[in-house]
Image (tube, rainbow, N blue to C red; front, side, top):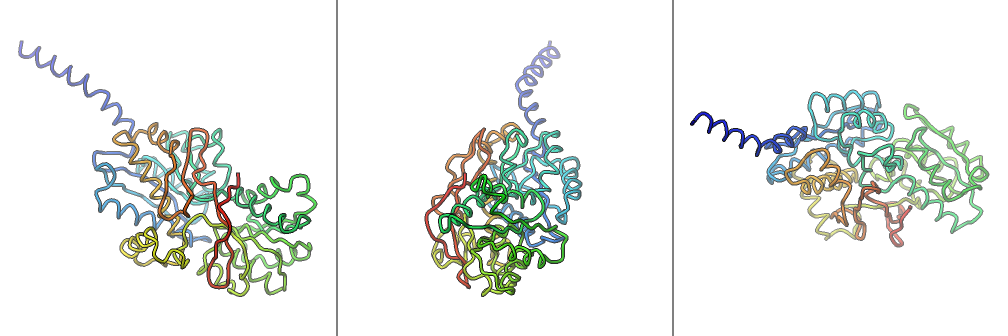
Length: 401
């Protein structure tokens, strides 16, 4: 009788535990003490400056873990170098999913790179959150149902703002564009076309470059010859610096807009020559720690304290670290909202239901919102102008959608 009773008791226990065990089985990359997440970063290669994002995010989760983690679990961010080569991104992502068994992929850098891994991640039911790209394609929920765009202004929205601004100043403006020959660069062309419509082909001249090209000097000379009075630089930092310097050297002074992924003073404006960049326009969505307006801002002070302690070797003039801080903080909010249910289904549910999340290093008034039909966390930006020393913001927040 005792044996039967024991079996009955075990049966009751198994019935009680089975939902929990089933749930635990679905929670890939999660243990009682750890949440494993992964990413690829260009720590080497042509855009190694963007590796700052990964360094900042690793530092953020170290800080979080020192405070006890998230709901009692430490976050283990496994950040691997892909040299900014999509085939390497695929290889490293497979390793993260199949060997490290991460719960999700977070903030991997690059438009072509995230495109290359998306279908694989979908086939493995792995979320692709806060993608390190502003390419609008990742907002297409039919193609990327398990992805959210990054905590940044979308490239296509940015280009729309540039076109509207230029046309407000000169309705007959002619545009010249230097763009990277991939989805990143093409997003800026799409944004211009959204605004210019049928006039696009008549008023836009485009020159492209490959990420492996040594220089783009010949493209800039060609663009000057087009007679354009508006110049849009849809380029990563190295080529943005070349475009600014070359246009200045050849005496071309159009109204110039610079992609907001390339506004870094230490890696773009100074190498180009600050006099060459004076007057250039761009957009902002984060607080620039070098802006005197934020000297006493509590959010900036907390960011500096974090940087000094957890990323001590970093250049605090590099706003990549601000983007890293924002992205990590957004993921922290999602994981906290998951509670103890860290299944893929619940991670995605929480990632797609963010409501008015304010981050201390976003510009005041910008809030993160997502929904089941809107995977774009940030859609507002503010114009800014380089004055030879720093970027000065002006005007109201604007949306590019």
